[in-house]
Image (cartoon, rainbow, N blue to C red; front, side):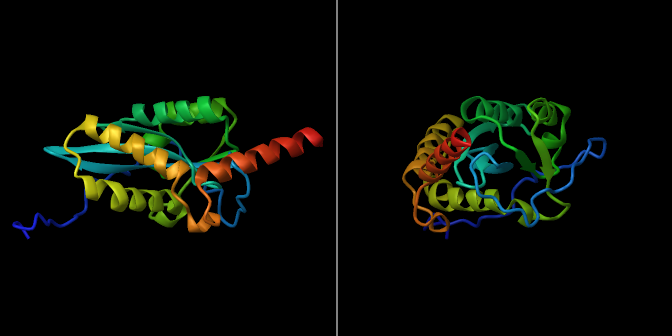
Length: 203
């Protein structure tokens, strides 16, 4: 395995660490049909190994279209980079009706939930040990790691940022999704959102 350059992929740092002092919110998506862009957004954090350590990646996903709306990297697990990704997504794409997260301290922090509350966004949180509640973001991480991260073996934060920017552009604009009827996230997000605006204007 050493001669072939093969190595095991093992469990990495824990990214979901709850804070018992933070307010937790109920899960709002059970049996809820999701049929419009900006109806529900979701987020999560994963880790990516680099030479000499690892960094953390947060991404915000529109659940209807699977479009990655924003993402940020950080070498620490504070709430700042999550808040930055949230504020960027809202500035670029508008305000969702519901925002779903896990119960990690970054997402239950006053800094993060405060942004959601100020915009009138309903807050939804996964149940304890309920990874399936955020399955769409988990699938994004699996796809990203097997199609990009494990193949490229990035060595530095700068290389990783450039690679992720290229990959997410590909993921949103050129990668066809079976679950979307072999359309791209951009096609579904833009077509359905424009149709919703047209229907609202005609009402």
